[in-house]
Amino acid sequence: MSKNNKNITLDEAIHLSYSENLENHKHYLNSALVDYLGLINLYRRYVKAKGTSLWDDKGNEYLDFLGGFGSINIGHNHPKVNDAMDKVKELPNIVNSLYPLPGALAHNLAQITPGNLQRSFFCNSGTEAVEAAVKLAKASTGRDKIIYCDASFHGKSLGSLSFSGREKFKEAFYPLLSWGCKIPFGDVEALEQVLKDGKVAAFIIEPIQGEGGINVPPLGYLKKVREICSRYETLLILDEIQTGMGRTGKMFAFEHEEIVPDILCLAKALGGGIMPVGAIVTTDSIWQKAYGSIDKCLTHTSTFGANTRAMAASLATLEVIEEECLIQQAKEKGNYFIDKLNALKEKYNLVKDVRGRGLLIGLEFHSTEGVLNKLTGGLVKNLSMDFTGALITGELLSRHCIIVAYTFNNPNVIRLEPPLNVTYEQIDYMVDSLEKVLQKNKGFLSLASKSTKSLLKGSKHIFKSISSK
Image (cartoon, rainbow, N blue to C red):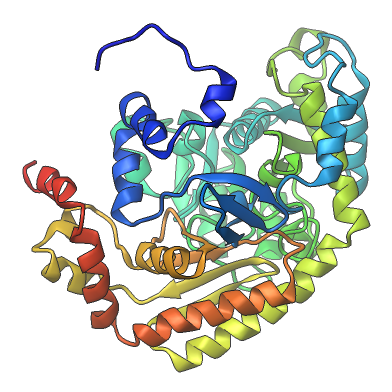
């Protein structure tokens, strides 16, 4: 592709045509992602977002039951957060001084977190929060090992990836950090066994595994984890990047078991779905051991981490969560939603399981990989994934204008994470639409056969390229 040495202006970019936009993505970004979205018919050009809805360039309205992978807890473009952006638009955004907004947000986080969690560090994303937490744990304990769980997901930067549970995302980057140790999720005996040598700095865990398939641990598991970590003086890092900010019917998911972590990781919804914000919150004691002296206070920093706009968005987000009683809404609507989905599970054999808490819900389907593999002559096997979740996702989007997605570590699980102010009517529409999809595909063969036709149609070049490797 020849270069024309002409830049695209912002105004031009906003109004690019469908084909022009795809060309830019194919030539300058991730071309395989363009092929993939086309393969399962998930590409849309959204031009407007408000509340629980998005609109495409043809005026069609879509209900968002993905919620930015747990980032849109307060809804798209909440006016309070947009107003906050306006209030600070003329303030300096990156200031090398003690600016008021980071201090105010840290104060507020100390008020809403239980126990003696007090000191915050701000960064830009979830994976950066995990990196900060792991470094803090090592610096404050002087120990080396980090324990993590299978099927976990803590980010894709090199350090966070080292402590995530799915090999597919890791294998291209070996050797990763060597001081991690993986144990089964929900197994307290395995945890105690690896902590006995007294060399473990921290155990990092999601209270509910998000990308693992919305896996909820056995009741009482986190409380036992807290006891074991305390016994062996190992720090407990809770990754609430996806579960935090009211998503599960509590401000933080660990509150369901009335425990307190040593280090708390936050991101996603903290920025109101408008600004990228990550954070860790820890105790004064842990912070002082790691970074409490003048010679160590600059050991871990972030240029954009506490920028004015990000802090303003987070301050406004906390106000919205409280003013609109979104935590209670998540609890009540989550129970309603799960009951409706369990009723579908009883009626349709394609549904394997319904699990979750609040408005973090996983809907697991039986695998259709075997059938699809036969129908495509082995090509689905070569794609190294199971398409069941993707096929259901495509059906809901194409036929019912509902946005969902499957989880990274278990593609047979569709995640349901709508904004916490989703209405009961919208939940009913989602359930009714899902039932229509299931009614048309009562068995594995029906879904696989119909979906295979759509996979092969217009996607022969993709399969050809795969089979030729």
